[in-house]
Image 1 (cartoon, rainbow, N blue to C red):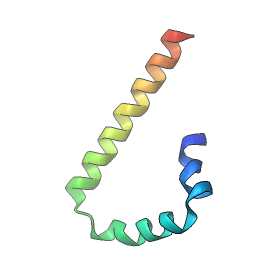
Image 2 (cartoon, rainbow, N blue to C red):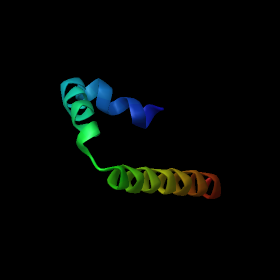
Image 3 (cartoon, rainbow, N blue to C red):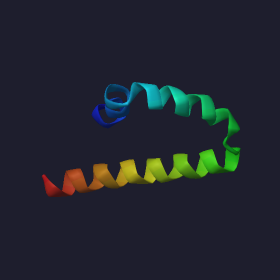
Image 4 (cartoon, rainbow, N blue to C red):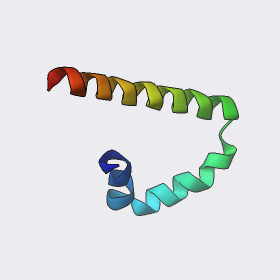
Amino acid sequence: MVFEGIPYFCFPSKVKKFAEQVPLIKDASLRTIGLALILFGLLLSYFGRTLS
């Protein structure tokens, strides 16, 4: 949640502009981005557990 909130706190106007552009992005691209974010989150969780 901390990482998700950073753009809204630091760049609210850019987040709004990006949100307007989301419907123009192809579904395949959004799926690829979503998968990459899921994998990144899993890696963070994995390394967070192994380093502690």
